[in-house]
Length: 111
Image 1 (cartoon, one colour):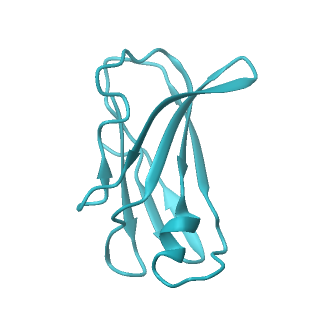
Image 2 (cartoon, rainbow, N blue to C red):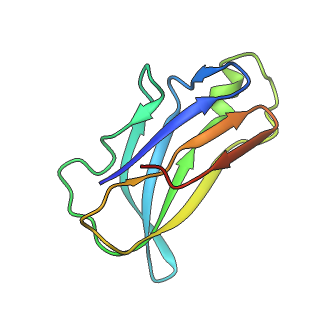
């Protein structure tokens, strides 16, 4: 299972309503696996719902531009954030959070 959680550190709370896309790399191309919108807690846990996860390289794309524009930032510095990561053990949970502000972001392997 692959999940994410977005926290808006400049607002001190969850980033609600952000679109997130999950893709898997196959050779030199990316294939969409899932798409979701962060809930009231900033979480998306349905990206791989009902789908088997294979070992490989995955990418999460966060539509940070639309999120910031909806909150009054006309020209966001980061229009989107892409995070690539490897899945080796398909029996484990892969939780990839995003900590976001208008001019920076960070991520880590969550639990």
